Image (cartoon, helix red, strand yellow):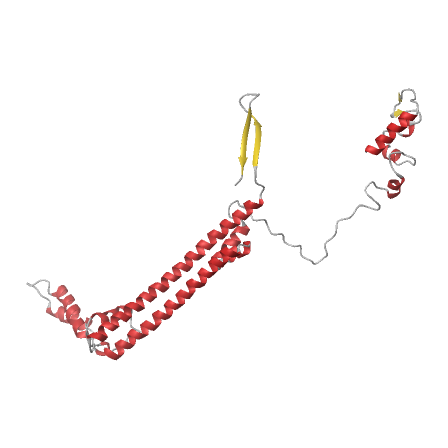
Length: 306
C-alpha cells in the first residue's frame, strides 16, 4: 500500500486543489483530478474499483479476476473411493495413563525392553533385554541341574537301598533318606504314634487298636528298603538336598523375571512421560489477573513446567 499512497501524494502536489467536495445522497463527489479516485456510490464499491482506468488496481489484476492470482481458488482434494483414511497416532501425553502410554507399558510387560526400544531408548532397552536373557538362561540351567540331581539320588536309592522311587511323592522320598530301613521307620515312628494313641492310659490300654494301627501304617512289601552302607545313605541325602536347592533357585529366577518385567514397564511409562514433557515448551510465564477484593488490586503469578 506504500506505492499507491506515494503516487497519490505526488499527483496532488503537481495539480491545484479543487473546491471542497459536496456531499450527495449516495456518497461524495470530487472535482478532477481526484474524481477518478473517489467512490461515487456506496452500493457498488466493487464495480467502481474494477472499472477500467482505476489507478489503485493494475490491469493485470483486472485481467486475472482476483487479487490472489489467475484462475479460480484451489479446490480441496477429494479422497479416492475405497481407500481408508490414514490413522493419526495420538501424541504421547504426560497426563495419566493414555492409550499410547498404556501400549508402551504392556509391551515392556510382555518383553522387557520392548517399550524402551519403541521410544528410541536403545541403551535401556538393551539392558532390560540382556537381563531377561540372563534370567531365562539361569532358569534353564537350574531346571536342568534339578533334573540331573533328581535322577542321581533316584539311581542311588535303587542301587544301594533296593527301592524304586519313581512316581513316589516327596514325603516318601524324604522318609527313605531319613531312616536306614523301613523296619527302623516302623519301630521309631509307627509304633510310637500307635502307643501315643492307644496306650496313653495305663489303666485302660487298647491293645487291639494299637495292633491295628501298626498293621495299617507300617511300610513293607514293595516299599521296603534297607541301605547297604552309611556312605550311600549320606550320598542320597546330599544329592536330594542339592536337587531341592536347584529347584528353589529356578523358582527364584522366575521371580526375577517377573520383577524385571515390572521394572521395565514402570521405566518405559516414565520415559514416555518424560519424552512427552520434553516436547512441550519450557520456560517461565508471568500471569496477571485482577483482584476480587479491591478494584485496583492485581494478582501476579510466576509459573513454569518441569
